[in-house]
Image (cartoon, rainbow, N blue to C red):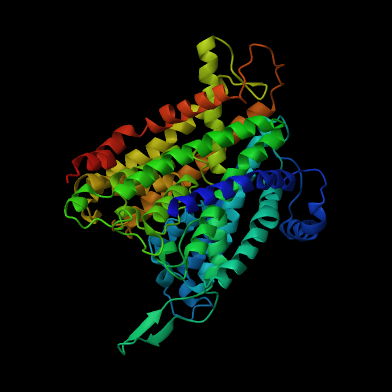
Length: 555
């Protein structure tokens, strides 16, 4: 039954992807549309209050708007976290956040990472949850969705648009309506939505127990739909208040997949090549299904050392997993949350089998198996251009993508973007292993994977953790904060520079020698490029971690 449920969830997500993608393209259409009748008055009010002019920006202005506005929001949220102890809506008396933890948290949620070095129910007041955290859960995905739309416009030879207009439209026309409806549904399913303080109850044994609660429903909907992933509670979506049962679990997986899976169709519509959009969608869907199959097989087989003792659970490896969901749904969730760079968890990834953990790591390292909202699809297009460039070199022809020549300037920017990710992961991992061995709970290969996972999650703006690390310290807070910031905004700048360069080029007429990018051959070249360029970059590191751990397991 679990496999049938998984298949139906994927089928529904893939069926919804096309209409959702076409709607996104329509929502960002710069000419007047019927959506202006519904959302125009609110948007005009916001533009008026913010003094936003609806003029087109070049790539430098667009990039500066993204980085500077996001930085200002990081500073504002940092101040809220530092003074939450004296701010209103704090019925449980939560203290102000420690400086480096506030630094880490503000960057984490503004970069759409939502990595947490605190426990949600005791680390934040209701004011911080609603005014700071949920605020960034809307602005962070809207920022990168805007960048993705600007990048697509550049590839199509159109003006990039205006970042502030695009970000507001992303919130008002896409994120807010869906999040509002889904919040009501989650509340109806039993997710709390209250401003009352922690409940104190008497247990059946006569002892007193404190039960955390709060405005969880409104938090949960945008957490999943915006590919955010942070947990209102420390247990994240393994907590029954944040994920009451099988139907809520299904809705969370569906929400995580919806925007990333829709963007290839948005791209196809906006560039006027729907077939190429379908090719990219199918390629990513195939990667997701293959990686999901590997993870399911590994989690179902379980740990051979435990199997040898005759205590292996009949439904697969259940260590660290919720019995409400079982091994298959837990594995499914772990694959989707890392493939979409959401970072929510309904199981502890530290307890995944080595191969299951490797799949989660691989999703984040590739960041193209759909990837997070906006950022993932930009990476997909980057690998598509690399595939076109390599194909052009093999036949001795200047590569073209959507009728634009891919030349030295673009490839240098892509090369820099490809290099920065492994640097942001491997250098801090080596530093942490050398200087902070006492904060790593597991020795040997698994301990190395814990650290590697932490920085991969930060660099890929995923946010999930292997857990087991004593990461609530200044070292982990500051290093992962820096990695999250650079991992987010460095690629934004370089990819917008590529978009600006391509937008300024004159289209090249298609000839019989033009390498087609909308057929099966290109799909194969694209997948091989992703696996060779992306996966092999990190192979030595994963060979020392999850692969070595798997090879040492003995029945």
